[in-house]
Image 1 (spheres, rainbow, N blue to C red):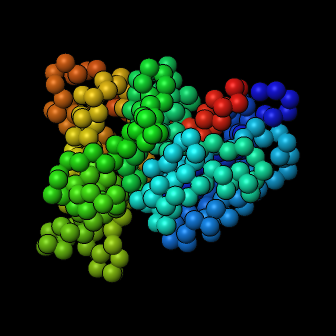
Image 2 (image 1 turned 180 degrees about the vertical axis):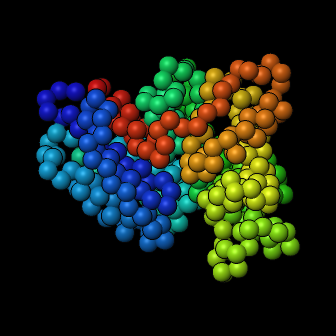
Length: 322
């Protein structure tokens, strides 16, 4: 990177909160903010808050030092144009030219990509995937997304839409997914799916400590289910284990297709730790051919909630040849 363009801005738009980070060319964090996404407010309102957050992290830093802005956004997104194509978890974001709008408002070059794809890139460059040429990243949160590194390169596909692992169909007659299909991995094992499954079981008459929360008129979150499972609640444990089995089935499909050396699990639900990871590992072993046994390691993310941000940093570094 030449001259004084030694700073990079990263935005992660996925999830309940969006994050904005300022980092230097050596990959060290300089500033960081987190704001509630408020997805129901619509594209324009969120974009304005994104711009305000970028200006907040740049406070005191000259824009002339910024090499560019990287954006990790929920898919489907065209990485060439930065246009979002109706992502299931951002209502109203159909054909939104996010990259061009941010570029116009910020006066800085902007590159954008699918958040799970960039998370894979982040783990490959800065996290537990350093030195691993073939890996899969899977995020389990509000939705389920995937990213693939193959032979050291991010796999994007012919239209930039590769690795939508959350939409592997496991049960054709299963619950409706936000994408419009039935029985997708996302509809069976995402955070909201875990909460719904627990509610359905309690409503059907099963006993659980979570009845107190449900009795207050609220739904249940995956976080509440995980906490109850940790405390020994049988129903919560069963619900979490079933979600893990579905995730393991999805990973088994990816292992047969891609033969990765490493699978990295991120997203808010991954905070369940071994309660989630152990049944995933067991299912992958049970659902893959013997030739694959011992060939893949399944680990939690090393970069936590900031994994998408580090992927966005890597995206800009690649574009400006740092």
